[in-house]
Length: 194
Image 1 (spheres, one colour):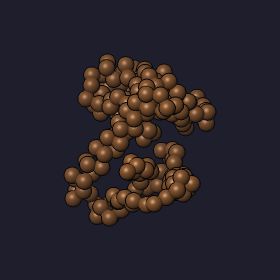
Image 2 (cartoon, rainbow, N blue to C red):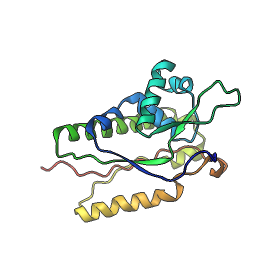
Image 3 (tube, rainbow, N blue to C red):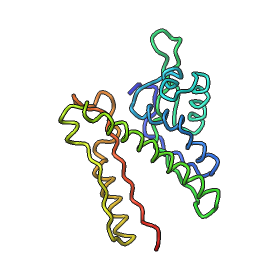
């Protein structure tokens, strides 16, 4: 990690429904997702991911900087390109869902996030036959309908999170040979009351 980059800043808390809803934009989620890989990308490189122009993508990067999701990285060797990287902080979305605006904002972000993950899974499923056998064998899609109390549901959520914790935050230099980016999506939610 470059020495000019602060480490372990406190999580950013977003509470305003307008701020939360701003993150639900598909281009912004694509940029957040790309920067989360640890890569440093220019607006032009992000534009290739979003399908937008570099100037439109630069606008989204500036907005993500304002909300603490992205930050300028040191200039590249030629000094002309301005790369961006993920901000080195967690983001806590703390929203009062008891208001209609808060509930709508939270739903918009959750649905956009799930759509992004669904699209990744769909792309893998469409090309799984092209993957090496070992990657075909480890991919998993499953679900479980369980009868749980609130406390048991909390325990399941915490256990799933704890299983992932040892693998979070690997810097590029810490990645083992043969590692590739893998999306693990935990979705724990109750069925509607009947």
